[in-house]
Image (cartoon, rainbow, N blue to C red; front, side, top):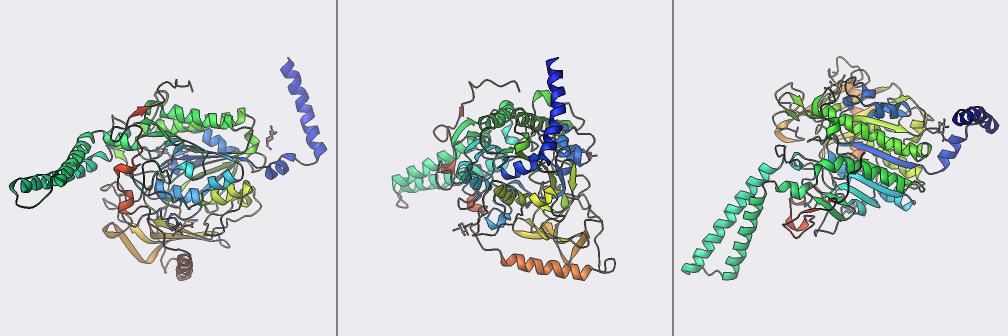
Length: 590
Ligand SMILES: *[C@@H]1O[C@H](CO)[C@@H](O)[C@H](O)[C@H]1NC(C)=O
Ligand SMILES: *[C@@H]1O[C@H](CO)[C@@H](O)[C@H](O)[C@H]1NC(C)=O
Ligand SMILES: *[C@@H]1O[C@H](CO)[C@@H](O)[C@H](O)[C@H]1NC(C)=O
């Protein structure tokens, strides 16, 4: 009864209030105050996996609702088709090769927590600028931008050294080795290398011991002992590598501390969700940035009991539906705390779905809808076109779709400006402020050209010809699909960027995505009167773009990606790294 009365009065008073003010106050107010920023990023999620992007069998009601209340981008492009470089670009607003975070060789991501490559300390993330602007900044979930440079706890690449006040999650990425029940992804190769080293050093040790005993060559006992020590180290590493990768890479950290080594996968999802909600609650009275970087929907698809077998697309579908539920929980927390109208929420994936990831006939990677190609392929749309949703009630229009080309790198200047900061002036920033486009005050995105890199190799370029609306895309290099025509590199697991596994095109393959979004039929001089003009225009743009590039240290060089025992984060005494500090932490009933 009381409820009915108050809601009755409210329904009378609210319009009155708005009339008195003549214009809705919300817009004015919200653009002048600093909004909270909540960035939700899925891992390996395809654009075709989400309801509001056309999937009618995977249920993603919460993400769909987010789009209904905000702006949905249909041409949102990742700067790279793999985690490490794409996320480096996202965090810095720059093409990954500007920070040395894209590869010259075949090692295109960070492979170990104990490697020395990572996001260089002199790169300025948006988190760092927001922190300087007084924001409370948190990263929950996946990092995959490196940990250490020179010692096992210098944490030079760690989130806390890159502008985050709080970190809870995996410094690495989810891999199959994290689950004891899954066939390992990395173990086998690593183990055979260790075994080879063990044998070689063992042989050298034996030979030198014999030489010493027989007096053939003068070798000191010290050298022999030292060699024997190394043999023992390699032998124990090899021996314990049965399940060891889990201890090296599948770890959880809270700030600078390793909390689980190896991570207890049964509780990871609820801990990540609980940490995210708790971060929002803790910081509700100030401006905050929360970057929730999901471990979903990367294999091995960690999924809790509640969602297993619930979707119509097997484990992959279950995993996405669980992630959508988590999105809903976070949005509920924002609403519950009364922050909905002062919070900009963003949802995206770091790149396209992984086509080659199958088990028998079952697809374990994502689905990229009508787009050709997938993860690891830089040129084909499926590798780089991802969902992109923004919501900020009262400031951004609701239920709006924008087809203009935008980049994940645009988040950088967008959130920096919203926080009242300025982007660094001493370097090239490739992202563009999205607010005018999202608010509808301009019709076109600022991006005329976008460059699609595979490692440091330029594979394709997109030109948005604003006057005509054409989205030209020229492919200079494309991967060789195997088996031919299969649409992916099933024989390798990933498509390569250079060498035998690619085809060079001269003249380039040209498509107009506005007419042929699936890149099905390349245009030629005969079928497209503008062919030569377009190719020439794009060629000049490449020259201009190349002039802005400067050589920087390679973060993914062979040396940098190699596992180094002395850089291994470890919560015991190396090599006995084991701990479970969440043990007493009762699982929340989320
Ligand atoms: C929805 O996603 C699933 C799993 O990725 C995929 O198999 C299916 O084809 C998608 N449906 C549509 C209509 O895109
Ligand atoms: C939030 O913004 C919406 C859209 O402008 C408005 O209808 C609603 O009343 C606002 N809510 C609050 C609590 O200010
Ligand atoms: C960071 O340091 C490297 C190596 O000294 C340098 O090449 C690069 O230009 C620097 N980057 C920035 C953004 O200052």
